[in-house]
Amino acid sequence: MKLATTQQMRELDRRTIEELQVPGMVLMEIAGRGTVEYLEKAVEKVTGKHVVIFVGPGNNGGDGLVIARTVFNRGAVPHIFFLVDPDELTGDAGHNFSIIKHWGIHYTVVDTADTVHAAQKTILALHNEKPIHSIVDAVFGTGLCRDVRGHFFDALTLINTLRQNYQFFVVSADIPSGMHSDTGQILGGAVRADLTVTYGLPKPGHVHHGGEGVGQLKTVDIGIPPFLLDPVGVTGFALDETTLPQIREKSTTGHKGSNGHLLVLAGSTGKTGAAILSARGSLHSGCGLVTLCVPQDLNQVFETSLIEAMTVPLPGSNTAISIKDYQQITELCKGKNALVIGPGMGMEPETVELVLRLYKECSLPQVLDADAITILADHPECLAHPAGPRIFTPHPGEMARLINTTIPAIQLDRLHAAQWAETMEDMEHDFPIITVLKGAGTVIASNQGQWCINTSGNPGMGTGGMGDVLSGIIGSLLAQGYNPWEAACIAVYIHGVSGDLLAKKQPYGFSASQVALALPKAIGHILHLPKKSSVH
Image 1 (cartoon, one colour):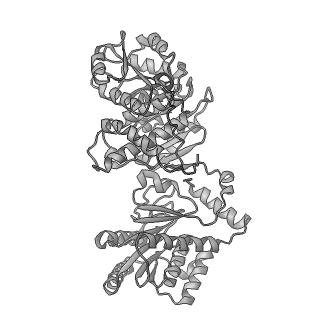
Image 2: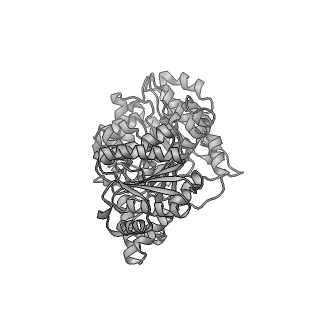
Image 3: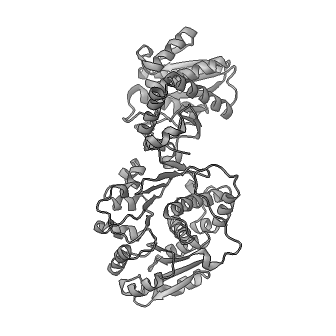
């Protein structure tokens, strides 16, 4: 499922209308009719029911007017509430208003707080007379970039009140009004929809933050030809089973040596659990061999907790991994396929020195998590000098440290934050630098222009240790021969699917260890899905 930013969608519309000579009215007609098709599938036929439509300015309001005509033709009684003076509508929206007037469809202008209050009484009176089938939100589309205020805010609040208190079904045209289509940010206030029907292509805002407030997401093909996508630069996508890079089935002649060997540098006093969880993530996602370099004094903890993994107690590292063992670690890197650095390793000065040196000198593909990210954030001069491919796996706090901003700023525009490496100056080598910005709707972005937003996972995964498991899965896939982009995407998705399988039995209260244990089932689930076309 490709994702188009606001600017890209605007350009796709423009080229379709101006260069390919498809009238805007045609696109709007298809959008409105397609919305009703999905609405009836989600609820029931509109025949004989009231349908309430809130119409705002611009083309989104025009979509709402097409919806009004369509439900009218299907035997419903539409009630249009204009939040602007309809006589001031222009272009395709204005043309559709002219049609509405000629058809004699009832409408009311709601342009003050008092009239919004009156609209609520009218809607409830209609409901007492005949059931309300649904409420259509066609107030603001994808171009909104300022906070919603005044009677617009009151109207959006009314829609949410009717949905919550009276269980009216709400469908949003293109995007829930009040939501920024690129960032998912709530601009003052936003509709919470049960169904969002978007047009042409979904937008990043639909899947950011786990798609909260979007409800079911459906897409209407309004007739924009696929050959326009590349020229417009549509490269991002929603990561789901249709866009997931192919997971390779294991060869019948394979063995532990052919399934990759991962080296993990993690753990310190009080944080051995993070290292253990990372190793479990790698073991349960198919890695042939896993070796942990661990502080000497903590080796017994790892030996008894990870019977399938190998451990190497480092003689120069007592309670935290130290630069004193650099030579032994570099020797251990020989014959390995990938390296995970960071889970629970601490911030001791000798650990800091080791991480920086390995980043600049070790050519193995590296997954950098937790304390390793914080160490590199404190030494930004090193970031442009990797010795090989690097995958960063920050949570919002670590991301904020990495690019020197705040957590709220990260959350306001997660995609932009994850794309930080694209603008890194003085890159010494042309290695892929991939960022996995964790959270609801994990964002994956590469310095080579690729990006996607994950659709798997659930709120029950908001507990300690989940990121440690993820780092191990990414390292495992790197060791098994997947390229860095494939490894990041597959790992994030199967990690979420593992959590989703657990959530079917219990919505929350499951642990990171359980997610690691459920990974084989998640991988099997994906491998047995019907084959679908992929978009990378």
